[in-house]
Image 1: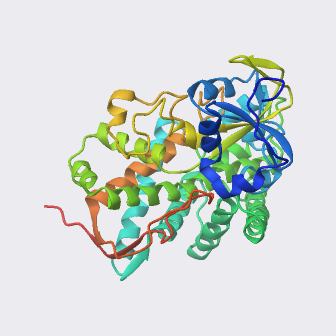
Image 2: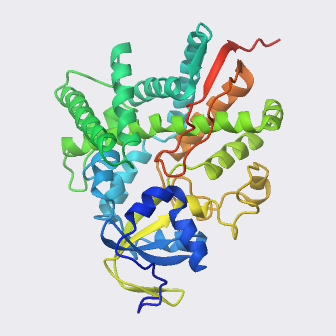
Image 3: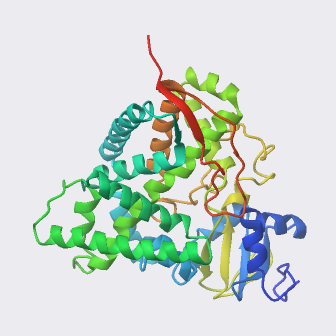
Amino acid sequence: MTNNGIPREEGLDHTLPLLKEGYEFIMNRKRNFNSNIFETRIMGKKSICMSGRDAAQVFYDTDLFQREGAAPNRLVQTLFGENGVQTLDGEVHRHRKEMHMSIMSEDNLKKFTEIAVQYWEKALDQWSKKYEIVLYDEVKELLCKVACTWAGVLVDEEEVKWLTKELSETFEGAGSVGPTHWKGRNAQNQLEKWMMELVHKIRDGRLIPPEDTALHKYTWHKDLNGNLLDKNIVVVELLNVYRPIIAISVYINFIALALIEHPDEVEKLKNADEKYTYMFIDEVRRFYPFFPFIAAKVKDDFTWRDYKVQKGSLAFLDIYGTNHDENLWLYPEEFNPNRFADQGNDRFSFIPQGGGEYLTGHRCAGEQLTIEMMKVSLDYLVNHMVYEVPEQDLTFEMNEFPSIPRSRIILRNVERKLTH
């Protein structure tokens, strides 16, 4: 126990256990301490770990926590980019978040869904000519095409393959150490060069993307002083649109895994109304690992549940553990979409892509895009195609970020389902 009353894990540093236990690191210690808050040391720094609904509510209080200087440099270099929206606070954060939310209009979301359907249709035609496909790889490329078309830049087939590879490496290498991490950093650098060229062309008048697209809006966005955003920031924020769209491939793989492991759900979904479809999608986002935790820095001393939390402390909120908290969820280790019929999805209990509000807080601006893309993908996997699932390794590791089924989901003899 520390002098601030917070339970403390003994030892000099716990980065290695974090890498070993992954998504379950905070959850395991929360149970051992029987406490929703404890202190440990990660990457040589004193760190406060928090879990649960009340912890999420306090963690998203912008008077108590800030994002600036909190994210580990390796994540800034591969996942967020320098001065990206995830690392900002206050008015600057709100203004930048408004820019991101400006492309999430009802019309734009409808357009996104229509584009997603078009590319699923094309993909299904191609897959039906192959003996087998690796769903994860195929869907990443599909999503890259969706992202490019929706965000406002048309690229040729070869460039799509390159772009898919580079964007994948940024999020697949974010939680890694060694060569995989450096591959992710290199990919981020290459992507920034590519995107910078597009921004230059737009500002020089050599390329004119549609006005309602991210490419147009971000390139011409003005900061709080009325000046055009620095080109480097435009590049970072545009990649913060592209990268997360490609990362939805992880969720789509888990949709396929859920359908394979719970065949009774396939029958329910064939005749499901929209409400049950969304319940199934929410349960995939709750049950399977996506974000493990998020970081912030304590802005000022405050007391929470009689614990004194000190200014400058690094804090981690347990995303995965909160979505599996037995005090919030009945039988959290069971896959059960029906839980959302009664429970709903409170913005601090259900936090697969962060909690709190979209505009004033740090909840993921692209969450609605994720849900819509998952909905289209689920519809295709259940209602528009038939396929065989050969024997394969469907296990996934809790200490890999992102965690993906080992086989990346192999589907064989994919065919379009004939409708009468």
